[in-house]
Length: 431
Ligand code: AOS
Ligand code: ZN
Ligand code: ZN
Ligand code: ZN
Image (cartoon, helix red, strand yellow):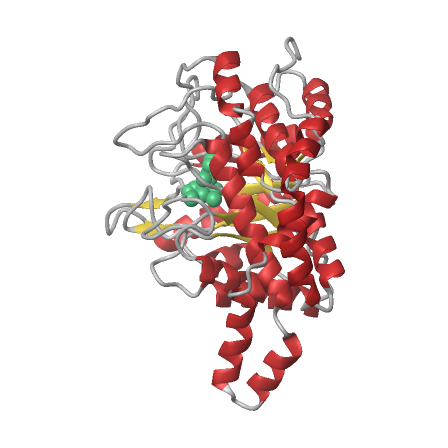
């Protein structure tokens, strides 16, 4: 129930004032860039339409297994998580949806939660199930896996949970279920790989059967962690195998941090798209493993190359950039203010997308057809090295958002106000 309306919110006047201050310098930089771009209006519109979902678990300070250092003012419940994303969306108008995690976010009153989200202009993105932890009062343990488990009763519990998550999502207007399984083994001999796969497939099938017709199921893969010898949905091949066997509503989900080092993610994306089996993304960045760092903070060129494949592949299949794939951030913030980190991540995603939209497709096709390796590289790097930030800022301005969301966040002392409203008490959130 909406007992208290949050005190902290950003209004149109604050944004207009902020934009007015920056307008002269922004206008100059945008005009200069626009002069050289034939299709600038179209690109700005595409940037305007692009929305990235925010996971409910990314709004508090994350941690590692060694510790967690809370920053204060963190959301204490689902209502406050929605309010935080409302703040973010007011600043950038590019993060108009929230992805819930069950059971971390069980709504008490679905209608009230829907109303609150709508108040901020937010909708509900993919629902996330959790069979990687034991919840208090849960009859059977997931210590040795969930859907892969040797005991049918444990598998049934995992199936039931996922079906329950679908039902909760239906109440909220969500249209997809993301299944990430921690299942696997940490020592050779622990698992029969084939049986683990078959058990998992059988469980996913039962969940798939419960999926409404207009829903999608995303099968997320991950190379390792928490298991360190094998993972039962360990790579895109295994995920694609499950998704293909399940049916047309099942897709592979790519989390950028879930590959072995140096994997060519852009090639994976291209082939999954070709097969019509790419479902969506979890954006983040990493140096080593599932580091869950700010998107674009470590390997911005890789992010651009991924978007380059996305734009090329989606356009060649006639797909809608805004609706046909699930775009979500999946990050954890150990050092930064979570909201500032998310502002940076959304910006990085839009920058990479804008750069990909700039790629001269015809020139690239020509270079490829004539084996002109040098020219092919030039075409891509020309787009990547263009400073597209004025395009992204212009798109924000036209959407009624802030030219510089991070600066406005700080000018308004949003975090200070949230701390006043909510206190400094640490609130444990997700992973
Ligand atoms: C775990 O490593 C995966 O990235 C999941 O997508 C996600 O972090 C988890 O489901 C959060 O609950
Ligand atoms: Zn993920
Ligand atoms: Zn992950
Ligand atoms: Zn991650």
